Length: 235
Ligand code: F6R
Image (cartoon, rainbow, N blue to C red; front, side):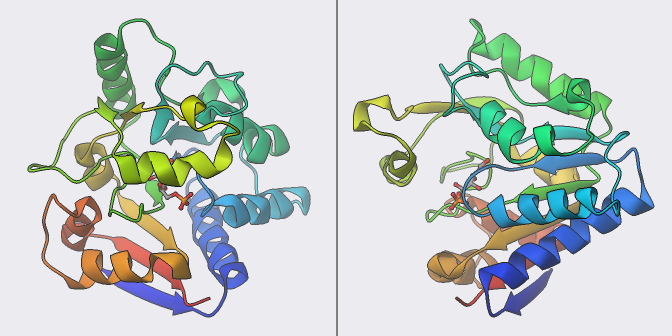
């Protein structure tokens, strides 16, 4: 695994957009695995700038997002569908029908997990999976556990994740307690993985990528991925 250290969030975002942009140029109909949260905001705005400059064409790209909150509809401003639409999909020429997220408002979450797993498999797994990392080492919403969950599943978020997510909600009681997430299997089957982490993640980056591989630190599994790159920003 490659760990690239850069000095600023701006550099991290530009470099991550270089790598994703290269993927789109090399394979215009690639499957991009995407993430939400604060970390990729700069990456997405760099991709939008490159699209506006005529340097990137997303018309044949397919996308699969890692996760979604349970109980939120796609038009809820707190949903990950809404996040992706407003920060990336509405600003580039991706065909919305080719953008996929788990449906957090599905009545039967078990059936929805099976549907999403089958969809990601039918797309041939991501050519490139973008990831952030939680303070507890989660990737997607695969929280610390005794085993690595392989398939798409619903998860009860840990207190630390709920607390971290609460910064984006007006009232603490509005913060979702459950999410649906891709499992570790799909992430490990991605042909390339790109994880981005800012300085606030220094401690967990050290534990995950320089410590032992353990499901208690889910991101540590990436040490075994055949093509994983971590971009870490020191500031
Ligand atoms: C989001 C996701 C999460 C985040 C992680 C870091 O789709 O899968 O694993 O990547 O919680 O979030 P930020 O970037 O907000 O620190």
